[in-house]
Amino acid sequence: AAIASSQLAQGPRVAEFEACVASLVGAAGGVAVSSGTAALHLALVVLGIGPGDEVILPSYLCAGPLHAIQHAGASPLLADCNPATYNLDLTHVKRILTRKSKAILVPHLFGLPADLAELVSLGVPIIEDCAQALGATYRGRPVGGFGELAICSFYATKVITTGEGGMLLARDVRLLRRAQDLRDYDERRTFRTRFNYKMTDFQAALGLSQLRQLPVFLAKRRALADRYNQELRGLPLAGPVVPADRDHIFYRYVVRVGRGLETMLTRLEQAGVSARRPVFRPLHRYLKLAGFPGTEEAWRTALSLPIYPTLKGDIERVIGAVRRLFLGQ
Image 1: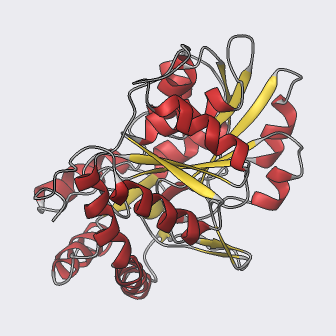
Image 2: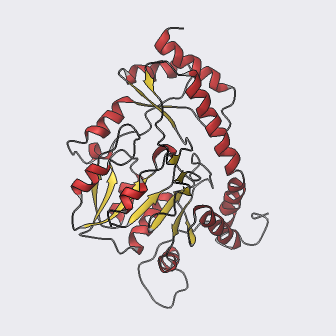
Image 3: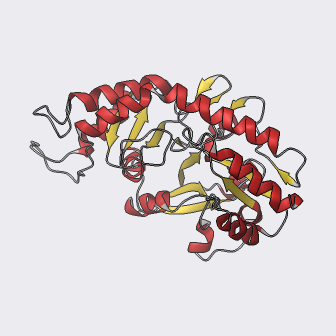
């Protein structure tokens, strides 16, 4: 219907999609954009972050946020991760905070919420990265509504998709208005640096359809994770850690292995199982920085097994291949 209408670019379906996602996370509103990276760049700009400012983020993360920080002219300040949960190491964050630290990017990695109460208590603006955790809860509340801002990605492999796309979410209406002003530069009475970050109406129509299916998607992910938990119990690996005060949506099902990760990845690929490191390369390696023992441990030991709503019967093949790795069955 969106494609058949006369409104292909940003229009009423975008506005509806923004309202629905904002309602889901408890934000005042949303600003749909062309990607998650664009959403983060916009978040930094509306917070007034630029040259001379630092943004704290975990090293154990994909490179997208690093690009957004550099687009804003700010400096990345990398923090270590907790190798048990893969989220930010709060002790390290406290140690590296400076007067120049103007925001903390808090990803809820692999679908597990970070320890938001402790991070919010630091008094530095929080940007929640919900790219892998839409629908997860922390202390009974949806993630995305705790920080000053939150961002989402709707890339093809995310929890819900618009093909490409993202969204900025905020509790403060003033921040939303700034983001809305910066998203589009056309037909303005005044000139300032703005960006062509719009989402199309037919992308938003797909997003609305996906959002209606989110409860089903999450139920299937949790059922698959339960199956992995049962079938892999007793093997020399550690399954996902889920603290009692938060809800994991299992965007990825990540286990920790003691050694031989490269060999395992090769053997699983030979068995037709697409397993991989959940983070391709830690950010501190790109920036040629030393240290980050938790991140290095995670990179050496974390193995991501296939998990997606349509996995169904193929999970048997994955389980069988993993069991053969450890038991020779």
